[in-house]
Image 1 (tube, rainbow, N blue to C red):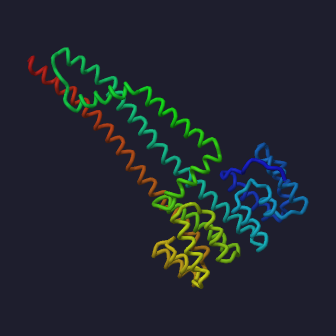
Image 2: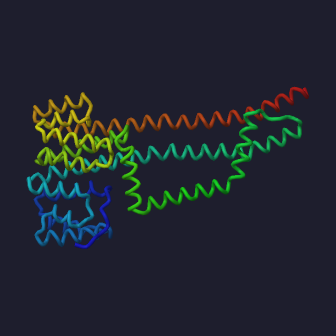
Image 3: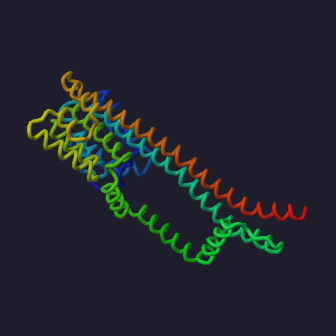
Length: 349
């Protein structure tokens, strides 16, 4: 099968829903993919959809065809293959749809949350630099002609502005190099992958990022256990999905070790440190009642909601902080200029 463009994660939930509708209607994968190809107009989608059609028409199982295409995530093709073996394709497709919808929503929320503070920070820096490099020198010359000096704070800021003006070319060159490096990393998949892996390795298991990784792990575990996968396989595949962070890798490895030594799945999940004590007790109760898969799905949704609330709180604290700092700096500069002028006017009066 020819190599095509990798499938976007934004498209995966829609593809899962389309496959679910086809299976629900009793249509075979070969016939269903043929119907999708006839209605598809996007060349990128057609590039891999045609390969899937050819493979399934020759009798290749859908999971194997997805894997051989090389354009789908390994987890996606593995879960489809397992669903074919266990006969739970509809359940797995719905679970995959919810999983990728949740993942895309979290990515979008994180991106949007980071955009607003970044824009505010750039605006704040631009305003402050404009004040200390352009506005203050004008007031200093005017006050100097009247025989008045500005306050020490304003004078210090003006000296800083003069230094920034002198080094403007170097600062501009440094910013251009940084911007170019960011652009190269963003556009080159290999570099982007290496940078993401390094960042995730160092910071991916802490705080908000760690909570998001646990949410992905719980969602994956829910799908794996619901599809009939053994607990060993479920933990192994779920660990691969959220792998890369040192802390998370250590916890998932401990979970696998506990299961191999005879611990129950709920005990292993609770004692590994992936979940809090309260969630661990909930998992143990769910295991006794036979609802472990549903409980893991609920925990994944709860972790996601809590992550989004933490993002909102973080953004809510950053934005006022940036506005406050900008207002204070502008106020200090204006007072440093206005007070000498008021003193001069009082002396004249």
